[in-house]
Length: 283
Image 1: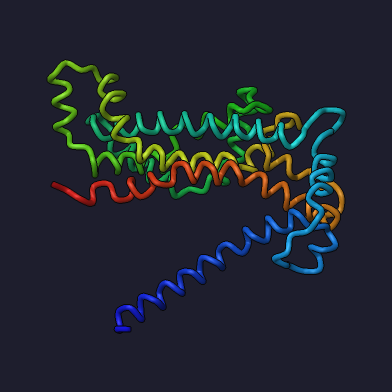
Image 2: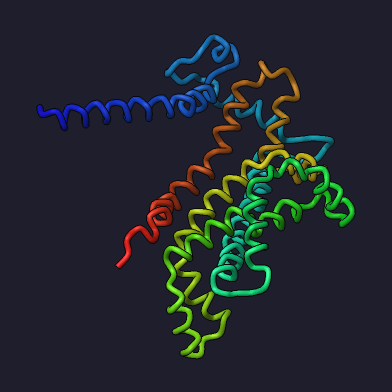
């Protein structure tokens, strides 16, 4: 064995070990979802338990009815999916449209607006939470999904990423050629720009979906009706009793909540490589 193969073997062994370490928390979550509270308190094991059905029943008991209204975990799934799907679709389209505007047009104040986008990327969203609540209160939008969807339509980072993607992949001559051929601006965007931006849109859609699906703080202060709660907020009902009595149910609820995220990532993850490598090869 030569020196190159030796170091390559060590590198592969290290990466395999690192992958196993990264997967341990996920394995703990799945296995603890099948174990009773007593078994979980004793410590972690790789052997699944026999309490999956009991944990599911206990989870449904705590999450099904509040003040006589149905708030089951499946309703939480539906509410979260409505919010996450709306944010993902609208964010992908309007962020691409905004990025195209910054790329293709020269207008007064363009550099200032783009600088503001960069500045807004550095400001934590939690700092404006109080003002955001008061604004929606004045607009009478509390206890609706509008405050959870509309502000995410064109987030600063998504616009910045897509604009940089256009800079690295789109040649301005292509747009000029389309204009010379008589294509309208809306037609150019939908028939030329949007198909070329699909890798960037898919990449940002993953993060938009995950962020909207896992959003806990904003729905907690905006939504008041339990039947409108998204899944992260609804899972708080498992803490209604003593936490030690609902450990298995909490692990089960968390395991169920990550399934859509895994599916979304598995479907769109191939586009991440395409977006990152865009523009790396020039002819």
